[in-house]
Image 1: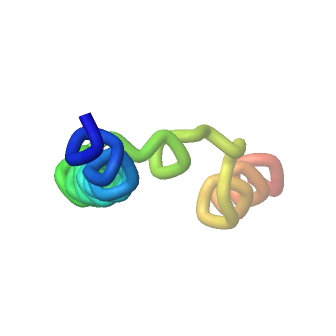
Image 2: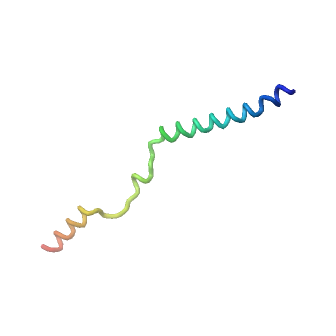
Length: 56
């Protein structure tokens, strides 16, 4: 029983280390990055084309 109590902090620490490692690995492996696909509207090239067609 005392050995079980003595190992509790070690198990808790080990579980935290494993959780951090898993989070790190998931962050590196997960290829989906929504900020890369977020549409922010037309860029400067689109505006330049639109201006050129309005001038003609």
